[in-house]
Image (cartoon, rainbow, N blue to C red; front, side, top):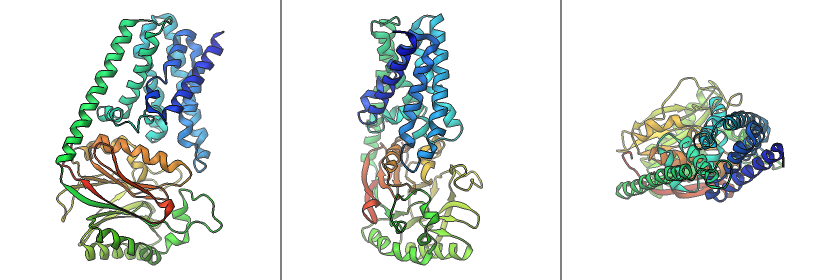
Length: 446
């Protein structure tokens, strides 16, 4: 069999294993082994393997009907970067000892992930290999040092160890053992970090928090509700109607003992100062009546901006604007803002805020990790398969910051994660209004 066919088949096998690893995470640790074999066996022709891996690994993240128009923007750059890096490594290995694979396969996985990240793609697009590990918390906790790219490097190192151990031209049992030992040590340290986080959470005080989501009516005639629906729907522009829609559910959450209530991204759409003040006044009245803190997002068309207010019984404590808006889809951010931490005048614990996909970037980790407390993430998704993918990816923020994450999601899955990344509770607005009340650990940082 010539090099072209070997490379194509190896790339297809790696892509298939990576795809199945989303269901069974252990497969992620051997997913790049066929690609590594192609690099050793086929030289620069391994670029074909890389192109297939890059294309198929990125596709699931944008394969929902709503995001399908973004498929070329994700798949083509990913295929090109994986092809170039795989081809260069294959050429290098044709001129040098194949044992270099132990270093170069992890480097390939890292470098190939960077271009999409550089143009602003969130981790569920730019780092699909690491995302296969989201259901397995020990693997996720390897990201506590260096972010989820560390997880990617370890996955690739495990694949390199397999190639080096098999009877191939790259066989080097010493390097295979060394690579395996590196992976085992890293996982062991991650397991210790996970156990330490669990012990910290067991000692942490608890506070009752709630995600409250009441979606507006869907379009007349039905159909898939896309991410733009809250800014297109006349019901979201009706401030008084939105207040009436939420009022009984705010009362239910407060009556259940919740002290922090998080509403979804673009809970309401305001068009001028009058409607903005009406919304904030209504939320302030709820906060004062029930003695609670409310995270109240809204889209302000008069600026424009996608923003939120943290409202206490005394009024607005602080505001936060979305820091990673979709290019060409949402208004650009007006100024850089950290997620926090903010100290409430009525709460003893730190409070941080982000909006939707802000949670999918690593820049929120350092300030939140030092404070712990609660990280509130109002979000808006769509119920066509994407909601499950986006729900899963919040595990990285929880594990890396050590903070409790409260994700209130319109047209999607609301959930509360503890600081280990464990889901304490979840509920979908597909089945009606969500009032998700949870006794959550409120720590002081990891």
